[in-house]
Length: 255
Image 1 (cartoon, rainbow, N blue to C red):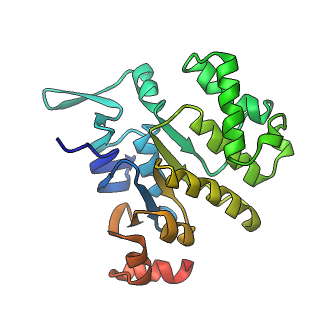
Image 2 (image 1 turned 120 degrees about the vertical axis):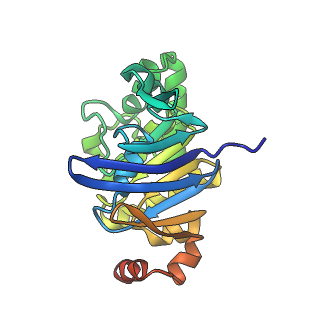
């Protein structure tokens, strides 16, 4: 039996009222792969990411994570939305890192990381704390355990956000432009943590404008525009020899 992909999207559509943001996106991400999504603003990349996590409901099509239908149960060929509690349970296995770090401002770095494992997974506090300290060490911030978000640089806050997502032991990590809100000199430290995760075999879907990261770390690159996949392939191939005019035009602006 072949192993099911970590992410499988089948003709995924998403409308916001009359606005069609995703128009039939089909793709697969194998376990341990890094998929990078690139494209202009408004092309549907972030919306697609949010659909994987069921933060947005799909209008049509199906999304599977690790072989499980996301957000719905299928009965007699019809989709029935999961109750919020069950949808939240599915979401536990998927870590998400946003553009703006979304840390709790009134909690220290350590407290931010232990919150979800204790509240959601009912992990004992001493166990969660030990794991959080280990994760802070992994993202190079063991000295900042007791610092509050306001005392940290943007790059440090984003690394805490990554550690917080990892604290739930996800099988899939989603990154939505994790470096776009950072000063240029802080981008490298966040990308370094992401590279390390990729090297350790974490399955990742990353929306980013960092083409160097895409070239170096991604297994596949998908260029989206206007809610559809325009071009996909091995990152070096697509970046150095794009086949589609829209891809060429986009890359000429960002490279």
